[in-house]
Length: 586
Image (cartoon, rainbow, N blue to C red; front, side):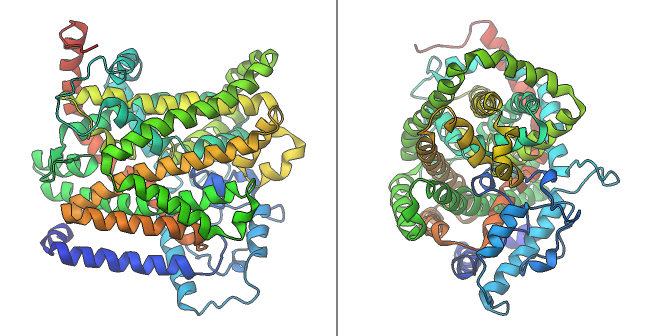
């Protein structure tokens, strides 16, 4: 019913409605007083960008619950045992509050309302499936993602391992026909998707996972990355299968297409349309918040460590980032891909070079670190900690990091030039491997070798779940100038994430409102780039966090229903590949 009503409204009226909603949120974000981030999770400034939960051990020492009444904007709907903050982070945030806030003000009220919404969303996504056990937690969204990844890995016959070599060959251009339909090459599509996935979570989320589960958590990170490869393969193949070329000549694909068209093929057009609309709205909200303002806000906070004058002139950072992002996104997917295929290799190379420098300088400690990773992975505290650190912070971070299950990457991969949808899915499975198995593992090795995760000198960072700062300290023990490298990496990570998420949000906007809405979304996106540098309303920022996380719900419903079509196409393609029937061009 809601779906029919929504699509009967004219494009102009829909655009006006969206603009009104966005304007209200923007006003609340721009002028609301600084408040405490307790409506969802209290997180490290950079760890927040990775969706990293604060470990349970960081609960206040004076009791098992927070005194939530001391925070003026904390909604009562969020159970304190579900989402906790850390005393250092909480006290620092409290110290920054105005001495006499005006709780009756409109902007404060808007932020309070957003906090209530966040509370209900967070409670639903993180509903504890073993609520009778106070010692352990299993959030619903984690199980939803894990079961999906395991099921698809088995159903596709471990294609994540079987097709790995072929994925490299396809990405290198061996099978690329420049005359095939699409907007970008396989490599450009991979770079665009990776620019959104390789980000702040690779720096902060890893450290938090290890502080919870010890070195053994690294093992479970690798497992999570490996099974996530098949999820990414399946959703990106579907994105190619159901894509369409719009009247403006550009490709439109992703979950909005395979949810609406795939369900229609099975006689459920209404359900498919509702799920597609839900995904589109979540993606638009996520692109403006978590994929945009969030990135500006948190990267600026991190860079202020080495560029302190930004603290007094945050608008300067916002203006500069707005100009850089605008130059790229106004050129469309071709320019985004062109920039991404330069930025992604650069930022990955710089960061990995620093990690290798640390590892090679401590080569004698590597065998012991690897042994600890394997042996402690199966200790009871490490197994639970690994799953909390990887499957809670990791799979929650999957919406920010490798995005396996969120469906966003399938929007970028649907634009690739190919006549075989399975082929692009095979390219896409490289993303979780690069993001989690390679980059996150390198970070983990440095932290394990340095022993930073249990160093008493860093107790305040560990207690406060300040993952980015802990990673920086681990590196700086071997490379004194690493904080400057980290600042550069954070900037590149944030910038690349924003340009890719602008494309995701723009495609969903076009699907909802038509091709003419593209330029309006881009303008709105740039407004949010600047707002990200001056926003102090933490609830508005956290809302974008939750929107991205929520994308996995409608997306995986479609992936579960339509995976059989992917399995059949994979069988046909793989038979031709093994028989040597696929044409090569290099």
